[in-house]
Length: 388
Ligand code: FAD
Ligand code: DHB
Image (cartoon, rainbow, N blue to C red):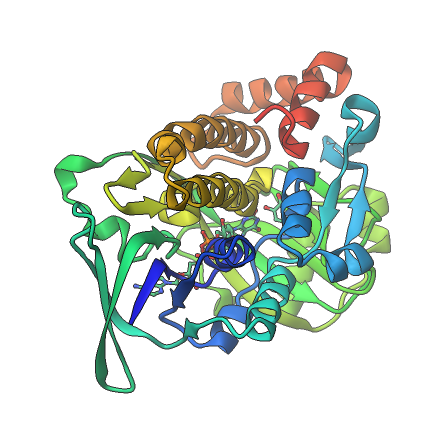
């Protein structure tokens, strides 16, 4: 088999890249380690910047998102018993769209199937070769049979634990990392959200986030310890803990019900540089991870892919400028989002080693934030993506 682009990974980055390349007449195959159902079963991000929404429109997959997505004009921040609204629309002229990563993935998979494009699910032992030459190759096994794909370019969209970044010689890549001393326990439930917009709660017992997927489906998170396990938490324990961390009005109106998914995510900041190695290009979580507090992970994956699709389209038309500048263009935005996500995480979580001074300074910073137009504007510009 021979294609122009071999895409490794069918998360949002790989699928979106496949769709953008297809619309430009470039042929690609996607190799995915897991089954389609497994990929669709992973509950992850939910908040889209306007540039991500625009990109999904350009990819021709925005129809259901516009029908079912919820436009949010701001968020609430709760601390010390009071809720404060950050009005994105007034401060920046922009809002965000709440539409689940699972739904984006489904829309992209459906578009790919409708166009008859090749995806190999449950591809085992994917390995990449010769990406430092003009003739890279990808090998894998499917149903016990070994296969080889010759290509011009490999797109590493295989997430943090993928094979692509791991195949680069250690001396060629530099990494920077922070692992946070807590996780997020998330619950999905078919219950109406506690409030029409997201509430970010800073509480002595730990952070909590009230998010949603629709007007009838809620997504909630509570900060938990690193050694915790989702199995340890009954639904009742989760709702009790969440309720304790909310303001009085939210605690009173919270509607609970059976969880339909419950999982723990670790919080990490990570960047690998550069994002290009010869004919191998990393995009999304394969190159960088941010803690979910700023809702940036999926949006960063989409912006990498936007830059990469444009660069590859020019490359196949004989212009290498875009591929030569790909890494630098992406990393500027990546580091801005890393900074914002790190800052939001520090602002809202309880750190196990925080003393009275650290706690008071955190309170003072929140107090300053909600009293300052400039500080609220800075948060809003980063959250909606304008400042990135
Ligand atoms: P992924 O979605 O990770 O896709 C990579 C794909 O590559 C996967 O399908 C994987 O199976 C496949 N793959 C891996 N290795 C191989 C291999 N060797 N061969 C073939 N295929 C391979 N962001 C937010 O903004 N908010 C959130 O609440 C949030 N929650 C998250 C919770 C969890 C548990 C995780 C892991 C991430 C979360 N994120 C969140 C981040 C966001 O979901 C990611 O930034 C986004 O999924 C990145 O998309 P991607 O396509 O780059 O990577
Ligand atoms: C969601 C996750 C986030 O990290 C965030 O900041 C906002 C929303 C969510 O899963 O809905």
